Length: 501
Image (cartoon, rainbow, N blue to C red; front, side):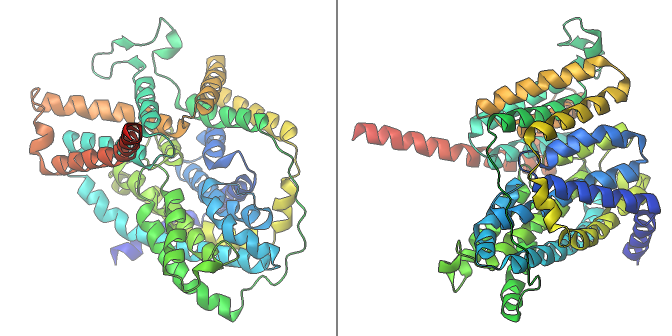
């Protein structure tokens, strides 16, 4: 009964005219971003973050959330039609979706993606509504030692799930934590790493780091690697799948939804991992594995469902523990803090209208996505014809104006340039900026809870092992670290043995 009352509060908040309007704007922008390759939801949320600071908190968060799961949805459209995934998690959809389009079944593939996304998003929203309150009550029992261990676990798991070198991911997290320590000490007020620059006494601005690392750096990378894009798509027909198609997609949608809902809470790229895992599962259990990669509709239904379910459930650790599961959620943490709200277990009691309004808006957003995307397929494809040289300067200009308007300080714009160049250099060196942003956001939280736990225990470090929850979380962190290191160790062993041979 309490859940129904809370959902009623949520829908009454989400259905307010301004909230529905900005939810619509969010999913529309998100879909457009998902269609355009090279920008991505992280860069877009980072660049649009400044304009939401003048909104009411619930309106701002509804819009930003809409951008995120709209981008997860929009990436499938061009993946299917022209084999050009607009978002990393849509790369799996392109394997069979584009083959279906080449066989004249683009309509069935797009409808399958839409139906799977809607069902998965709806189920994941219910999971979020049911699971978040008890998890928040558990989180209220956490002390500084438990929070330190939890943050450490999140950082290490993000290393294990990162693409590429685990050592580079670890280095990026350490760099992010170091950048997070710039400014005055949280307990003594002593300046740290400020180099006599007055602007650094308050720490490095989160928006400047996010916009530079994910906006400017990604744009520089894409301008360097620009390729000729063609968007010649015949008229899409027969949008509704056949009876045989509907029979074949039921199982993949349900399995993909379950996998995505479970994997979405993992730090790092839970939605990407969910898509790839769903595709692997469907191919393994299929009676027609030879069709995968050649237009199997299950290869569209499963990954798309997993992708969108993960996009919704990634809000669970943010809303219940105050911990971001990936860079977009780290940006959401920044939005919470700017609006004077501390993300975590107290949000559900201190800001119930915001908490339940955000959850209810996700279902509304999923309905809007279905109503928007199929009729606008032609518009999304035509957007691909916009030259990068026209599109990207406008994006950078918009980001610079938005960041400057926060404090009317030119230093913030210089910071965007600095972090944009730094991000570009890191990308060229094969390093991912995403772990750096997670380290930057979680670093101060890690330091604060470490020092608070040691103060309470009078300097006794065994407090992290004598408290059961903290000990379990640290054990999981060690296991994740071992799992991340094993591939490197195995490669070294192979090299040694091959040299001896």
